Image (cartoon, rainbow, N blue to C red):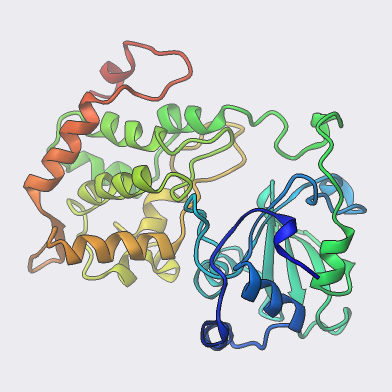
Length: 336
């Protein structure tokens, strides 16, 4: 089977040494067809001509499969690395260790696809649909990765949009950025940050990451890196971090200044279903770049961003036109 025909954009094809490294990282031998897919394409975003898995249960019926995990990132910055991104998402969404996260849907991680390894009720290597919401179930949809791809059908835009889990969520990304609640940790950090218009600037940086449903840090890599600069500038006034692991470690999400504590309950308005999307791989790359460029300064409490650098970032952000659906001249006044 030629795998590239299934993707609108692919990630990074993997050679044998990289495939072995991925298998070492996940602690699993990849099924032969999945290994071949990653070798040829690196995974990627499915084309609209091959994305609908028929027969999904309940409200998941008609959902489009979106991204298949593999190696590295796509040319537009979608980070789909099986060894890092998928592993992180499995932990964050408490996906059973007996399966391997394989693909996301247009519903994000609320509905996804996994490959079975050790669940006795399903064949080894079968692709399962998983509803990760409380009380969610698993359903076998294909015998293998190849079988999964062969069953995919075209997206039909004329089907009733009200049946989609994203119905009613259009525009929530920008609304959440400007008007959503902020986590307790982020609120405390803002209260001790000396920059007068800091909440406005943080929300302005967040708005540049908006898609119709939520905020996504790696769909616009340049803006995503800038957002992390602004977020860390705020967080360091509460609790500067000693290294990137302490900043991104999901197991430390209750620690002040940890990115999960800052973002998990932030930028959400009432009725918004989809949370802020970030991943450890993207944050690692941002952190390492700032270290390499000498933009972090060591202090007894932890690392802080160079003041001259962040001053320039914030000044450029002030001069930028804010991303809003209907420009409101009072937006800045609300947060100043």
